Amino acid sequence: MRLVTVGCSGSFAGPSSPASCYLVQVPATTSPDGRAWNVLLDLGNGGLGALQRVLDPLDLDAVLLSHLHPDHFVDVCGLYVYLRYHPTGGTERHGGRAPLPVFGPRDTAERASMAYAGRPGEDMGAQFDFRRLRDTEPITVGPLTIEPRRVYHPVEAYGFRVTGPSTERPGETAVLTFTGDTDYCDAVVDLARGADLLLSEAAFHEGRDADVDPGIHMTGQDAGRLARTADVSSLVLTHVPAWNDLDLTLAEAAGEYSGPTVIASTGATFSV
View 1 (cartoon, one colour):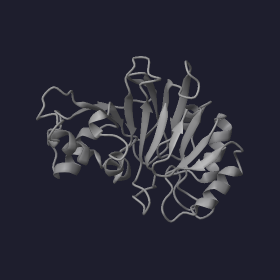
View 2 (view 1 turned 135 degrees about the vertical axis):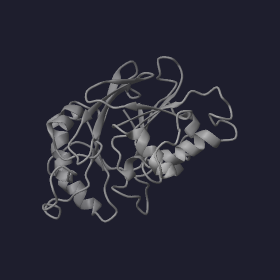
View 3 (view 1 turned 120 degrees about the vertical axis):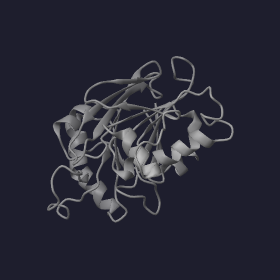
């Protein structure tokens, strides 16, 4: 598998990155069926524009939305336009393309319709096959198995454990965990257990955000503790708001976890 950081800014698009959007790819050379697979984890504001530098959205095989805050899902509206009206590949103009599977929390179809049209009832069925995420119920997309887990956030929210062919160890499988937005909880530890790569949110700073209600975000220290407790091989810190000190976020994580650690940046690619 290969992870491409399309957008990684926390809570809103920043000056150097769109909001949450991550592309998981299985290259044809490592795919058991000999074809490439492309799955998006989140599609926050600005993500669709940056995605087009990496991949034609017509080549997506599925989209998984961790939750329905705008910085994680709102560019589904732009993707709808792209799929519907593209002159050479839009679903309505070329009738042979199946609707794109979009997995999300309850009411994803209704929320997408409201965000696009300003009213419920916009029919996106020719473009999107909306499917409900359910805690621990695995999803199969080609050679990928994705386990969603309900995590600790003010709305219905999920993290994802993605298992697929390893690009670093031919013939073996690898595990990528994406926390989504969450405070530290047992579910996210289970998701991360033994992962080759942990993509963990780290939106808060120790001390500064102590008075914020629990159940919203982790700090760099929480992310490091998660990586250490779950015994992951490497840690990528993400969902860092533009006002945060990146060096402090790294230092907080390093106080808990001694393994390889970086902060996500737009366009960065990780092989697992």
